[in-house]
Image 1 (cartoon, helix red, strand yellow):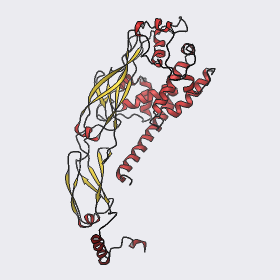
Image 2 (cartoon, rainbow over the protein chains, first blue to last red):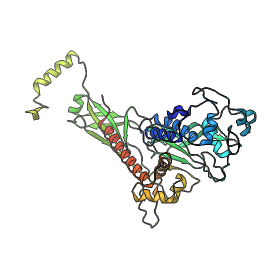
Image 3 (cartoon, chains in turn green, purple):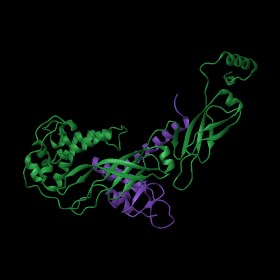
Image 4 (tube, rainbow over the protein chains, first blue to last red):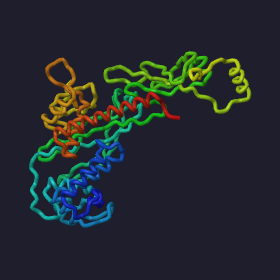
Amino acid sequence: MKFKDYYEALGVDRTATLADIKKAYRKLAHKYHPDVSADPESEAKFKDVAEAYATLKNPEKREAYDNLGKHPAGESFTPPPDWQQHFHTGEAGLDDVDLADLFSAFGRSGGGSSGGGHRRQSFPMPGQDYEIAAPVTLEQIHRGDEIELSAELPEYDANGLAHRVPRTFRITIPKSAANGQRLRLAGKGGPGFNGGRPGDLYVSLVLQPHPLYRPDGRDLYLDLPLAPWEAVLGASVHVPTLAGTVELNVKPGTTAGQKLRLAKRGLASADGNVGALYAVVRIEVPKTVSAHEHELLEQLAAASNFNPRKHFA
Amino acid sequence: MSTPLSESVWLNDVDVCQVEYLAEVSGLSIEEIEDLIDTDVIKPVDTGTPMRMFQLRYVVTVKTARRLRDDFELDQRGLALALSLLQRIDELQAEIHATKARLGHPR
């Protein structure tokens, strides 16, 4: 089992009062709470902070934790023998049990190394909800792919101790799915205790950035680079879409920033409608030109009376 | 359509559920959810019937409410205010995202 320094996680001294611990927790919760912070790493930080607070705010759990002594964070250690007796782990031991899960089980099973006499909770406790992230691509959403997800989730043994075990789920992504959308798998979370209902598993879709397309709701945006002469003279260009390449007619005199709409080439919505693909025109200029091209451009400059800055005058 | 608890469901804005379902999956009381309805954090859909129904995506909202309530020890008023502000931030982020999508990749 790996040791975790809960005092370090909260940034308090081992002699901190309950009020100090609560104050430190609140300060860090405001900073790292995943519903408040935009920092993608905040969720893991908040988990550490909440885990530390859950143990240290409870006098019995704190006493049991303090009895473990002080170790460097992450150091492997063996819990006292009476913990193994208490949890009836036998030869299986507590090696694969997370310290947080162990202290969580204290509340349900009635105590730890600090001695007996803890009251066993008998009211129904609902099981814990779990959430796992599922990275998905626009192509997978467009096709409505089935994807496989693997995650290590806690499973509880007969003594109420959680052991992390790998689990695999297969889910079908609806074609109307969006970034952040969740799938609720009822009852697939942690087990309830004392008759409480089991928790749920939530799968959260995380849309991966695409090298070409930028989604806005059910619409997609794509940069369409054009050569200056294509924009001036018009052209027929091939444009990639999620459903395959299409030919797009660019009208003569097309300007930079203009959006060319390809209906029903976006993403599907739940009501059956399909968004559009917008090709946003960009005029690209060659960085180097051949002598012949240079000569032709000089001729164009001499022949043309086009002044893009006439409104300056 | 109404969603039984035993199903695995996508939490979208098309399928709907009743307020009791939101309470069941979130652990909030009906009274706490009513407070979120009163402050427009959660809005019922117009089904043309007297029964109030809510988009399933609100499951995420009420679960967030439950987390905030527990983790920050918020009362009902504080909870409604926090959720309103978070919702506003979500809307602004969506607007920024949409604007960036329309403007194109920086070069």
